Amino acid sequence: MSTVLVLARETPFPPDTGDRVVTHGFIRGLAERGHAVHVVAYGTGTDRERAESLADYAASVRLVPRAESDLPPRLRKLRNYASGRSDVMAMFESPSLAAAPRERIHKLDPDAVLADPPYIGQVFRDSGVRRAAEAADSTLVTNAHVVEFAVHRRYRNLASDLETQAELTLETPRLRREEVAVYEASDRVLVLGSEDREELVEAGVSTPIATQHVALDPIEYAVEGDETGFADPDATDLLFFGSYGWFPNEDAVTTFAETAWPQIRNARPDARLIVAGRNAPDSVQELDARPGVEFVGEVPDLGAAVRDAAAVVAPLRIGGGTRLKILESMAWGAPVVTTAAGFEGVDARPGAEVAVATDWMEFAETATEVLDSPARRTRLGRNARRRVEQVYAMDEAAAELEANLELDE
Image 1 (cartoon, rainbow, N blue to C red):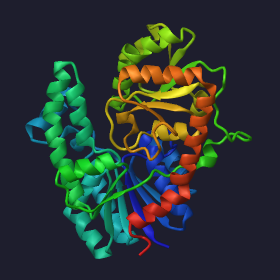
Image 2 (tube, rainbow, N blue to C red):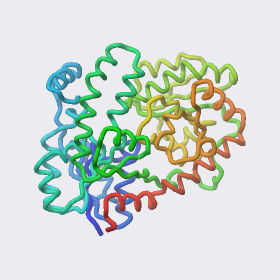
Image 3 (cartoon, one colour):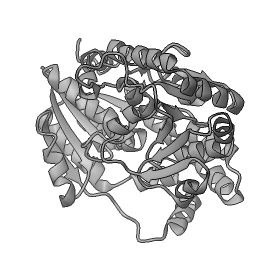
Image 4 (tube, rainbow, N blue to C red):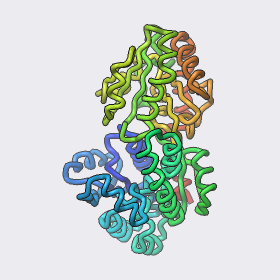
């Protein structure tokens, strides 16, 4: 049995957001394969109950306070930019986040320390953390999760308002410099897709890079007695869901509503677009006023919402990492229509397990065809579910993670 210390930006429970799903799956998968997994995460006393819910898998959970700025966000950003810092990285930097890993490494003598994502991995640049890791012979691994600077660059190229363009013009090069420094301070970097590997190679990262699949439990996504997908032949709803704190989701659904959705609605006047998810800004909530669009916000049972829909749409213009909304929809046996950017990092066959469109016209045509063909919906959903079982199942992904953390040597 090996010992692993996981550093996370928040307590990864419940696994109901992208970051939490990934980190929780890694912790659970390693624990079920017999490893002792300890966690350090940002959190306060109010997060203690969530931390205690990890007791089935985590040997310990240490919560540390996050440094909070008293400045309004705009002034905070200007201060960080003026000092040459990335605002994203600076927001997640805290003396307590460096002190806790130093103490835990000294006490636990872990075989590996896994930081998820890179703005948490910046603790590997701390000399005390590095000395402790060297003394314990610990392997320092950063899970890129998403190559943040690449996402910011893509968003800058798509942004239409001048304020956002100016902010991203300042942030992106600073973020790239600091993010690359995190990868260079690591002994190994994990990426969730080949596109992210290419970004890091192009950025000159010299640290070994390994691809890692997300760990999901297909049993938790199954419905008893259903082996062919959940596609209701009479369903006419398309579902978009996501957390809108992640700006590509807002961009995706608002752009989709302006471009492909009117074409779909023209072909299928009975169709509805259901928009779900937490922290939606006004631009997303106001989509409710469009014909055939219903904004429902955060839903109590996302699996039920997915099963009630004819298909899930993921019209992303900004890729990177792996879109958990697509993987979870596949696990639920749902047909998914997405873009090339949305398909990045998804280990599946386009056309057979996920429908992938190259432009908005093709997206509208594909979504309409999926609505018109219950048989195709069933086939896509069944194939998608099987693909998750083959390459994303908990034990298989955890075995891959063991190798990537060098626990099997």
